[in-house]
Image 1 (tube, rainbow, N blue to C red):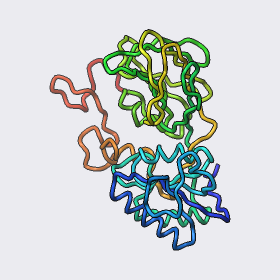
Image 2 (image 1 turned 135 degrees about the horizontal axis):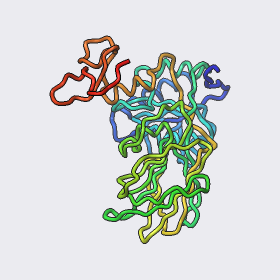
Image 3 (image 1 turned 90 degrees about the vertical axis):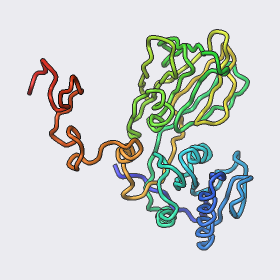
Length: 325
């Protein structure tokens, strides 16, 4: 199946969400706004983010009438923009100003060429599954949307939280931990990874349930189907908080229940032709070994057999009692 493309419409309007703490991001946003203005395309920024856009709007109505949203910063800025874009299904382009990430797509100097494709309706779109979370018995009621993860964690620094975990209504276990992360494949390289969760291709569709610093024998993540729903109930004496994609926490009193499931609205990320693959980014982000036929150490080249180092033996020596094929 061919990748979907950004559909060009008559009345173009582009929004920008900018990392205001980075001078390079502010400068890049101003240049993009000037580029849009030269082509008669009005721009919009968030209220309080003075980058020279034609108009400012609050977050609650920011995505209305936009044909494209641009985040200018790092992956954190893109996550903030993704929530705003999701409300109206607006395509999102990440312009990278900062460290290498998994979500932002282009450097500021490469953004105009990709914007030309977007405005012409030929740019590729990549759909990423997202999460929706809500609570029963809490003081807040509006569901939270997340591209990376939803975290239910302890509210007090020096205490653990007790959580009963169910999947699609069936009891699984009781966690005694600092918290539990429910993440998407996109979020598998974020907080879940830091908590020893697996790395999952963003093309996969699943939910990851990963405990944070569990004080129990069972400390493994669980991977569940995308149509399954996670329920976490706050037990014991310690309340918790819920945070979606790093946004400010929402209080969860003892006895409240959180449900987390696949969101109806996915993220729609703009991609360019020849964009680095997920595995290429993985190699760069984590400094993995290079190409299999380069001058890599023994065991890194294609055809080498890699065995654990033991008693001074070479890494290419098989351990004792290993059946040779």
